[in-house]
Length: 443
Image (tube, rainbow, N blue to C red; front, side, top):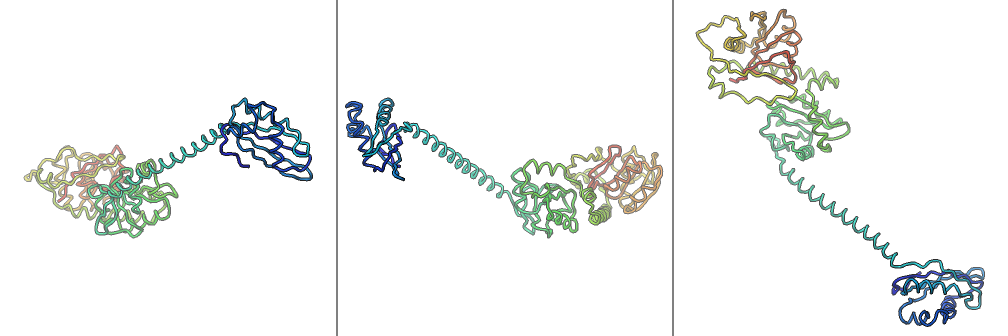
């Protein structure tokens, strides 16, 4: 039912019932005719309508089975009291046309209040829409700028032009991930020593880097992560394994998840053992033994002068938080060439240790000593680890090869207190009771 748009304040809604069939003009005529003179000149409906105080009367009725029912709507611009009087006057109507009638006012509605309610509802909708739009625009700007900066930081590295973080050029340790999206997510949280393999076929660039740097493989928590690790173990050297939670990918992780995964990274041998990957573990151990032999072959001559040692000394890799490896704090004294090397060692004399170390490095020999410094046995570097287990009364070791994790583990089990060598390999754990000392020189 339409309402006159000139309505200003109130709307009178009256229910109409008649005993016979009537039409709309009959209802309008009854309203004007039967209220005429009832309320005086000031509230005469015709005068009020002419003066714009009352709007156009709308009637909506329906006739069924000899009866007529419906509603009459009267827009009022009068005040609250006058509108109430006018509404009450409508209920005095008892005939419409030729029929008996009953008129009952159902509501006297404050149109302004309804308008206010609609204004509030619409205002809430507009405000919410404005906030949602503003928030999405703001987030979109932030995301766009952040992604622009992150993508600008990504470099292409090596002959394979792999996506990588800017710190991969100079960092002693690198994090190997699967794809470019993983690198973008790690860059978002400030981790820049990353490089992507771009699939399960490990590029030569990553293979080469793995021989020069400490490598952590950061795997997705799905089968694809397992495949990448197996391929890496076949063609490259892996030191640690970090894993995303099951069913998630590195590119999806939050800052907290990334930090947790990298903080609890696992040495590769331990990871393979825990996962029951016996074939891969065997291959890693064989590769480590081969690496020890090659490193021993490459250390035939130690520098004689302090200046040469400082010039050729390689920067030490940053020790892992859980490792405590001692490096000799005092530089060994220069070797006095006139002193004869009779094979005995005085462990309280750095010169004596260095003389013997130089000789053993040239010969690629590992020697075992008792507490007094007497030799209990001399063995090739590659065979020494097996021989240590059967040595009786062993107290110290001087090795002409690399001090490896395997050598540390066997020595500790055999009750050895000191290990001296030229270079420390990839040691991830060391008992506090065992002293490990190395003069890290390269020829």
